[in-house]
Image (cartoon, rainbow, N blue to C red; front, side, top):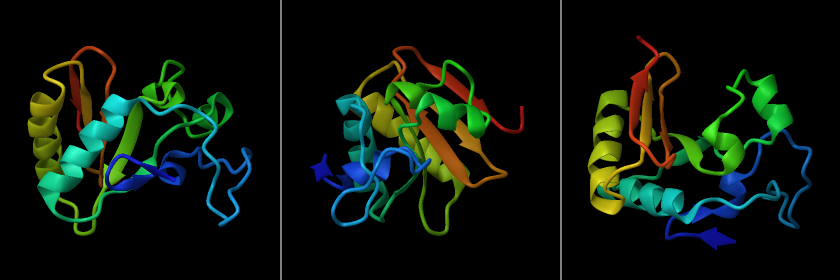
Length: 135
């Protein structure tokens, strides 16, 4: 089932595999994803002009702990996604995320750049935060 313009709800589902599967074999999403996050991701996808892949969306608390996520992770709340695209330029994706966050939400967005793993984390936490894995 589509959420937003470009994404399917299964893309946001926990990757642990313990929450069942849809009839088409895609993971079942059993948690609400914040609409502000979907709107932000749609804007990022629109601006990039290429498909954006969600590496991690919602995480159940058990899976979050297994992958080393912090206990207060935005992923557990359904307010975060780790994203990438083919041929990723982390700096460019982070700058596009920043521009889109300003246009779509104004404030309250977390953006983390992960150069060693080639993805950008975006969330709608309610306050601004910026970080990278080089810090």
